[in-house]
Amino acid sequence: MTADRRMLFVHAHPDDETISNGATMAKYVAEGAQVTLVTCTAGEEGEVIVEDLAHVASAHEDRLAEVREVELANAMTKLGVTDHRFLGGFGRYRDSGMMGTPQNENPQSFWQADLLEAATELVAVIREIRPQVLVTYDQFGGYGHPDHIKAHRVAMYASILAAADGFRSDLGEAWSIAKVYWNANPRGLFERGMAAIAAMDLPFEMPPMNAEEFQFLCDDDIVTTEIDGNAYVDAKLDALREHRTQLNVDAGFFAAMQLMKDDAYGREFYRLLGRKGDAENRETDLFAGI
Image (cartoon, rainbow, N blue to C red; front, side, top):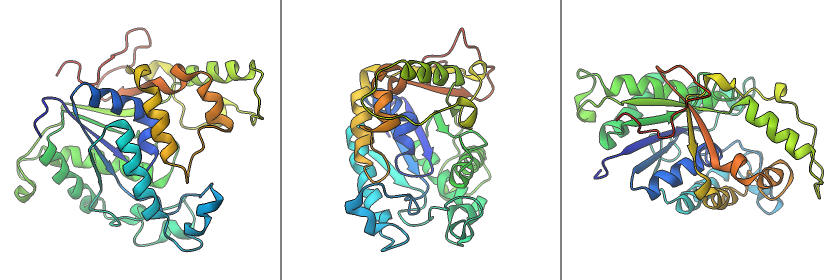
């Protein structure tokens, strides 16, 4: 890697990266940083929302993985990200579905994967690209999805193992990541957004929403970092549109969010490990202090 600034994003399924970090990724690519994405599964168990591709769902032909692989590649093109990989290679780990489902018990599922084995795959990537910054989920995986939780555990364990001189020299030279971030979604911003949407005369119906029902939200005062990606909102929306089996950004909730374009899509939030949140004095650069 030749870029002086290098960052690694670790996500569970295709589309997670664009929803949480699309503007951030596009911003840093445009600024010359090396952005690498590792996706842990191909999202085989995702619900297909478009009728013309319903036949590829896991309950039918079980070919959704190959479709989502293409969707992810197209989305990364929109964001300018040229280095995107699947953990252990495409097809190594299968989407785990939700807790308590048969898919979650599948021995090939990411949830059932050996933690050390999966983390070792990521150590190799870390030692290859040598990122100063790592971005992943919090310990709850944002909203409790097994694959998100497992991605968090794998990323955190790998960040420790990658820095250990005595761990698997065949994976490359030890590398210590300077800053580890967890994605964050401030409750206050969400509530203000819902209030703004409620006051609009929308040309479509919106289901009732209550911030208390959304487990992915966090208190504003634990957020340490806010990235202004307003200049990259269009790129993020274009990337989201590539994930057409999973998302329709021009209908319902996602369409309403477009009416608040910059607030909803251009600002992305993080928690820096080792730093106390400060709603009045947030970082504005993931590489700050490096």
